[in-house]
Length: 164
Image 1 (cartoon, rainbow, N blue to C red):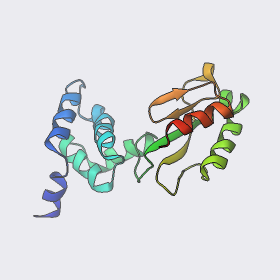
Image 2 (cartoon, rainbow, N blue to C red; image 1 turned 180 degrees about the vertical axis):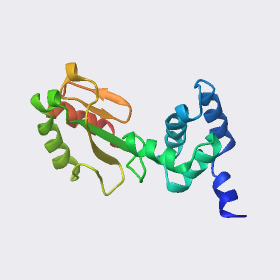
Image 3 (spheres, rainbow, N blue to C red; image 1 turned 30 degrees about the vertical axis):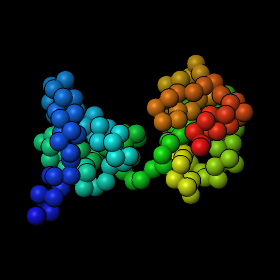
Image 4 (cartoon, rainbow, N blue to C red; image 1 turned 45 degrees about the vertical axis):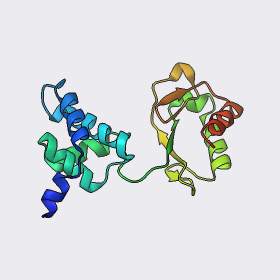
């Protein structure tokens, strides 16, 4: 099997079906490229170079074009991440309301800084320019759930709920 054939076969039939269904809601495949990547990422955790090539081929986009979109959109993960992703809002509103204390608590509790994953692979902590929750500052998003306003103690309880 050639490398191209191998890459084309990386997507499961279920993933292809989900992507095709999602793309049917867009005027062009290019408009749904990010959504196609999100479908694969939800199932695989992150988007490797080969997966990006497979998605690009499936949706009919140039790999470089899809990669540009993927690297612009900060919620497409192009390297392995932890089982839980903690996005820390660092907008002006969150910063004014104490996001730095939450970031410090994460560093203390998890032993990792921004952009790092815990040794056990449980958490990845990432800064986020804005979570769109200025009225709930300071805010964090754990996986796909927004939390805020948060104190350090509330953050500890959220982290504890994600641990066995």
